[in-house]
Image (tube, rainbow, N blue to C red; front, top):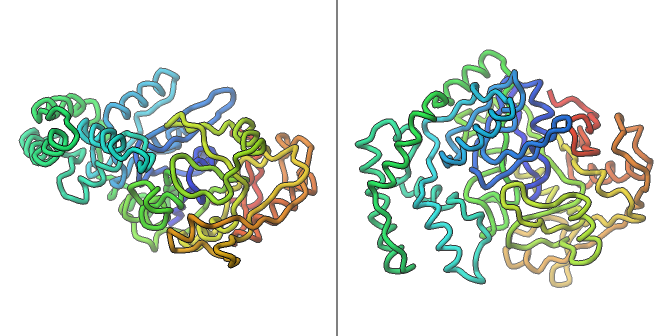
Length: 427
């Protein structure tokens, strides 16, 4: 049962799309198991760049079946737009499967997300405004709309009306907005039903049968470990579980079927949105990382906050996910620095702390403790083996591996599909 989980080991944006795409030719299924179109992957194939927001990266591999699992929240308009864009570029999307139990992001979820964030003002979380959180809230409150509901107009109408009973009270009386008309929402959602229907399937059954048949299944997380609703920097987190355990609930497979868990690490650290970030840089180095690394959110379009590598959060990711391997990305971005700081611990109120503090207050007060590693100036983008890297680059990778607690099995030395050094095979 070769089932692999691939997830972000930082705050997202680590380059999961490149890693998933690299494995896509060797796997039979690639499964998104949580999140929605608040996550973005950039994949470069030859001279073509693809920005994926909702679709699994495996959709670019012709022999792979891409799957949107039950743990994902789906905006039908975004889904159809993304499919159309790929079809226009000659990508076959006909093999896509969507769980009938996945929840739908409705127009009112998007409205509630945007007005709530504006209402919070300086206390805002920094959501993408795409309705992700309100949709997950509806799911937990048992007033959500699922993909399968699009095929029973009576049930759909009842569920939309029930959801809007409370939401319209909030919109009109608290936010001074107009009430949303249930019939209009139902009509819009029904308009997507026939277009989506060819893709809808019992994905839990499909995936478990595939594993029983010894097919290779790759579970692809969106965002990153530190954005997990339970294990991230709460409340500055997403509304789902990008950590490895989320693959089981978000795709409907048991934990005993997972054979490998791969964490994606950027050679430095970035995050988008509000929240604590101990190694964040506000100087020329931070701007250089942003510029050289092209650090702009694929989905949000927002500049990413940039900082040096944080081994404390890498160790944390290893622990909470049970990581077996790391895929280190964007090592080439660090070319040109004489010395490269690496955060090995935190100082909190005069104490040196080796592990991520569980207290939100302590984490907000954490100051990075750095060790300086020698840099390199040689171009590494043409390196094909670990031995091809300059000695200082090799030493940097070895130091990160030792500090993070799991072996680094692949290294990204450029954005292209073929600009990767594979040290140990993932499959």
